[in-house]
Length: 345
Image 1 (cartoon, one colour):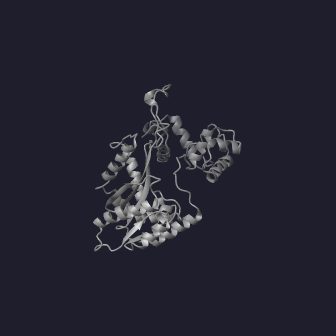
Image 2 (cartoon, helix red, strand yellow; image 1 turned 90 degrees about the vertical axis):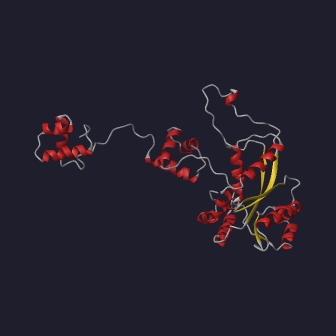
Image 3 (cartoon, one colour; image 1 turned 60 degrees about the horizontal axis):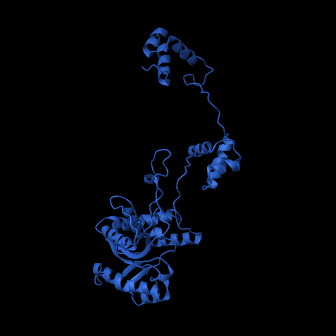
């Protein structure tokens, strides 16, 4: 039997006494002083105590905020989630530290986190996305061609990093993250993917990329490469996904699609890159070259172009595109569950 006076031990003491054991015998059994045993027996016999075997309330330093103030802290944060603890303190005129406010928020399951970055959506955008997801929830996406453009840069695209360093060593070279004020280069690319993996990728750096150049890509890159995988006798029409940028929706591009009925463009809602799985492919490419074992740094346009091509080709033969396309139903369902607003994709 433990020597500390747990609730179970106190119950054991009372039970032994009711069974006729002496104070000395009980004290020996529970390894306690006889005075402690007597005290718990007396408390159990005191009818004025509602919970005779429980521990008395502990004393301690009183809270520096009242319950009303705690409620105000939480209410203000829920109404203005991007406010900080210093602003809360000033707005509510609280006589406590910012750390105290943070503790009150933590107790209410509110924690400071880095916010997700998403395209701004209006109610009209959300309504269009919701309608699209309902209309296409049961679609077979396994043979749909997803297209998109992406700009890559020679600048470091990794997120904010932290460095472990000794005190007073912030400006030592080994602990400094260097940046380049000039010499930054960017290249634009157009690419397509399907369930079986990446298709082709083409450099389309502005200002050379326009509607006429887009038609050239459709004629000289998209159609030939897709038809090698899906011959016309196997798939008469090809369902194509593209976003609504002006290059894609120009009159000459629409006329071109009318002259090529074998390509069926799926009407895509505006502001919806999260619904297109090729966006995840671009993101995975950036992740791969920013992290070992493929982590690289490049300074020239030639190095950047070589790296984009290399990482694109390295995505072949993996299950990544298959998993993304197979998850389209879940992707659309999440958008429906969020009433047309943001998904985690």
